[in-house]
Image (cartoon, rainbow, N blue to C red; front, side, top):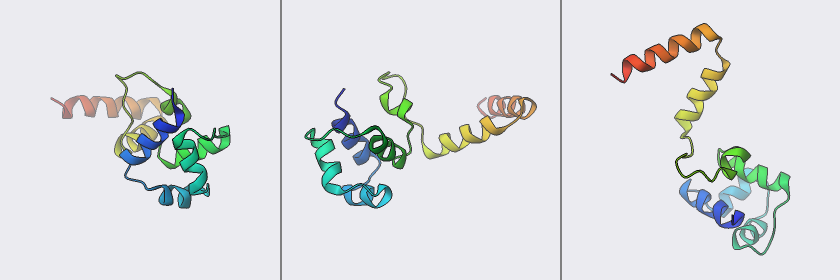
Length: 102
């Protein structure tokens, strides 16, 4: 896996410039460019800051399963809410979701 190329594609798909990613992470644009071009290897904490700034977890970034796609902001928010619910509320949400899709 080419981490730099994957980061670049993800950044571009999110509509972020290197400059904006620099502002979000505090990582220099020169360093980000080097990572994307493959001339630099990011430290784990640097990679994590870049990935999280683009709304992903490390697990999502390294998942190469093509059948899985990245979650949209709405999907991520829904998942966050779902995970914070007790069992009774999550069951109710699943029931409502099933009814709404019919």
